[in-house]
Amino acid sequence: MIAVVFAILNADITTVNVALVTLGKDLHADLGDLQWGLNSYMLAFAALIVAAGRVADVFGRRRCLLAGAILFAVASLLCGIASTLSVLVIGRVLQGAAGALMVPAGMAIISNAYGGEQRALALGTLVGVSGVAQSMGPLLGGFLTAEVSWRWVFLMNLPLVAVIMIVAVRSIQESHAENASHRIDIIGVIILAAALTSLLLGLNAAQNPDKDQMVALALSLVLFVILIFVERRTDNAILEGKLLRLPSFLCSCVASFLLGFVFFLFLFITAVYLQERLGYNALTAGIALAPLSLVLAVTGVMSGRLTSRFPLTTLLIISCVSLASGLAILSFMPASYGYIGMVLPFLLIAAGVGPGFTLLNTAGLAAISAERSGQATGMIYMFRFAGGAIGVSAASALHSAIFRHQLVFRLSETPLSFAQQKLLEQPGAAERIRQIDSGLLASQVKQVRQAFYESFAAAFTGTLRLNVIVPIAIAILTMILMMRKKEGTKQTPSMDAGANADL
Image 1 (cartoon, rainbow, N blue to C red):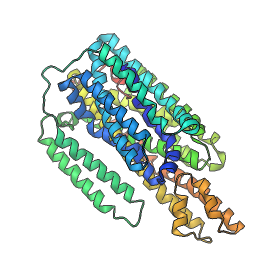
Image 2 (image 1 turned 180 degrees about the vertical axis):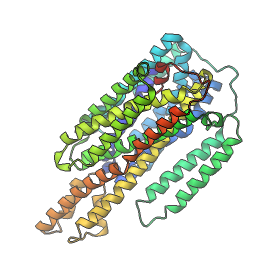
Image 3 (image 1 turned 90 degrees about the horizontal axis):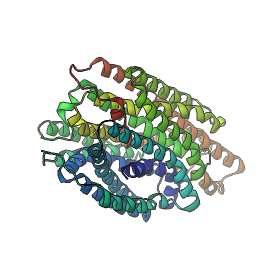
Image 4 (image 1 turned 120 degrees about the horizontal axis):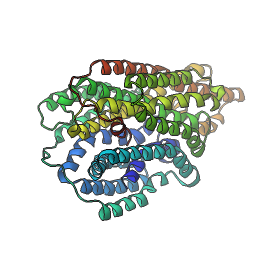
């Protein structure tokens, strides 16, 4: 049953990715606004995951699992019936909050139910199920979007949640953490959520020259500084200072942030590119992304077992090289090669990201005692999904800026009005070009079409090219991480640690 929970939460990200373009058409949202369909979920998850783990310890794991399931069902229904993007975003925030409640509760239930080798096997099973769900997500989301409706990407969660609740009530015994502190860092959660939201709003505003994004970015910086000071003086802080002062754990958290940043950035703009530039529908885009997700899942599980044979540093650096190579190759791949030219880079990226998440968890948790592994895992998740939310916003901002610059340059002899340019930025713009064609000469129509496709391809490759440096930064952190091992740290069995890698 816990495996079903993890499968739903993993699939919920990848299923939504391929539905975004169609969703944007129905809700009249432009490409810049579609980012909120992803990062609102990750933002809520990142802000609440550590505090939610403590809530589960205090008030009961089964109780929190059931509460999270109910909230997730309500949120999924709200997303499924949403008539505006604002309503959808509210639903996604609630889904993220529900996920934050269910994940630590589910992991604690598994840890209490099994011991020794059985626990390792159970946690390893969660990784496998999560990976399969993640790999099937694009295909399932694409099928539902193309053949039924994007709304069923969310509504399909309702019967699954009903099964979870029935099994939880009948089969799971309530459990609490002995001597768990009842103090929950609510102030830290609020400040972190406000700081991340301000940062995302600032990045979003950067796409529109008529908005002053500096206010939001400055506010975000101030809030992050306040958060640091508040957390230093707070008991049971979501950013536990004692853990972050361990070099290995700190490097793992920062590297997880960077890996989340680059992976979710890549996933967002690739799903859009397949549909907007290559003309795929949601189902075809889902099929195109399925091999990437499958390799990501398989390599993620395998890497946890390889730590017993090869040095962790070596495996992490190989992962970083694979990721950087995939991004670099894809960023220089001519658009004329189509999907065939994207397959090899896709596989390289997946072979870097899958092991990367698992190995960074293993490295970070190796410095933590078993009693604090739950809190440490929650913090790593927090950094990963915070990085993912910021990465999606950065992808949207970079892509829009490059696209506009390229479009203006290529249409210097056929200037379009501001309204016509905005039309080209809407989801399904390839179809909407027809609305522009009617007022142009035949030669101008051809130029507009060519300029649009070339500008979109340039925005995609340019955004990726700017982020090739991120895996290099992760590799540097990896070397620092392994060179700064603390004496006396507890070595966590690789499978136990690796099993916490994915949702």
